[in-house]
Length: 102
Image (cartoon, rainbow, N blue to C red; front, side):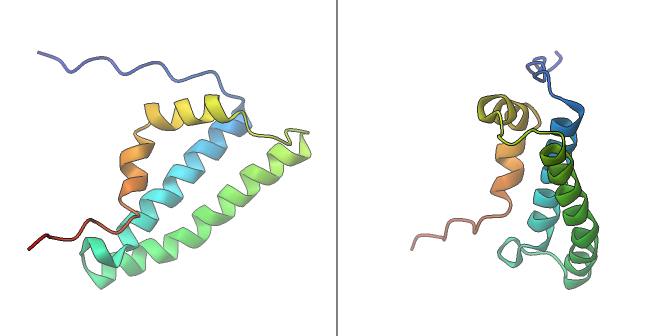
């Protein structure tokens, strides 16, 4: 049996799509760097090195939106896009995991 079909991605401008993509790439890298999640220093180092480039791309996406006159986010639409792209789980990897109870 196949998994259920995910909901469709909402209509986004090209700039909004770039913003969402860059934002999630940054979130993924921060999740790989998170020392509370374990892993190795080398993989964290590689993620930190990549973070510089992805943060620059995120800045550029926001600057493009601003330059085009898109001065406000369409929150509901962008939040729906983040949910469709598994943004809640991905952003959860940036947080400190709950502690073990005694």
